[in-house]
Length: 251
Length: 251
Image (cartoon, rainbow over all chains, first blue to last red):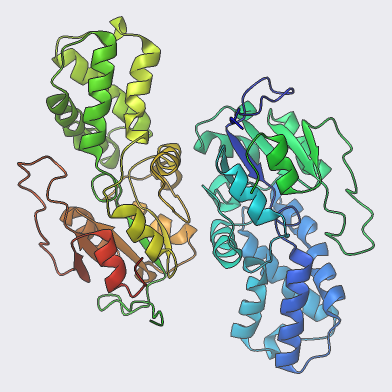
């Protein structure tokens, strides 16, 4: 099949780059963090509910980002915000992080650098890469995203972390500065995400949008983002499905 | 062979990332630009000495960067500097760039996005990638480096262009900000380059260094950088040679 780049109905432009929300959309953070917390707890002789621990840790993510987005605190890289939240979760559970080995806690904090891809992510991205520039558009910092790509085998063409744009989604600068570094008009970029709120902001800032359904990102009882809630360019069940809709040959 | 990361005698650290000067070290800019200038001249019905044109264009590179390095003008991306130099070369040759098609001239300016790799570059980088994080450390802007990687198949893990560090080598910030985005100590990075001056600055800023001999970068009469002139960690004849010295299995 001859490849023809996708033309976005919403932006009226041919898409040149497909960028992905990462945590939840490309990688299964919950499974990865639960596994790392379990290993950590066993090594430290702690009794922890690893699923609850992962959910509480992730629960502190948006409030921490909100402080930066609102300007209440200056830009801080995600690794540091994760570390602050991690200490907070330990204290909530009655564990003093100071009493744990600091290298072990630092390594646990890097769980977010070692997350497993959803089964369709690597085949889908590999297929997409033949027709488009692909990269994350994530709140992760560059070193986190580079480590994650090496760890799990994500074949990104380019990684522009939030420490490069110095902005957290859904702040406008996160989308527009990324387009600037790629030398593209925002309408030539597509954001693919499992989160409607991220797509809303991308659309508002002139990007094309694709929803990817990830029904168990937050575990089996997930209630949010179970389907598209906006007029996105595309809706898909997986990254391989998205790649097919974007006109590239599938493996 | 079991892989053991290289320990740098000069930094005393295990190397985690190997970064490459790009123009001349990884890609053969002269062959690429000569080819593009010839195609352009034929299409426009111009009689140009394509080799002289390429050499004059490249000759304006360091003077243009010097103005930014010295602070005489604020940071400008390399694509724009290349375009200013291109117009200057045309005028020197008695051609008014305004009388040429602006899209055609813009496309000629993007010659630097479409440069061929030296024959050893892709096999060498592919081998290195199994043991190290690899990327360019180039004066090219991010979109130029992304296009070049897609065009010629360079398997970078990460691309931090000069528009991200907002500094041109050999300015200190070009090296240190890159290390910062990678979350590494400068001593964990190795710069590989065909230019002794670049390695001098890298070493001064705490990076490990490797010289790669590229005896015909400037054409058959090249006189500069024909061999190492400093106490670099490694000296190599090619990127595959370098990969072998850094302990990875060769294809």
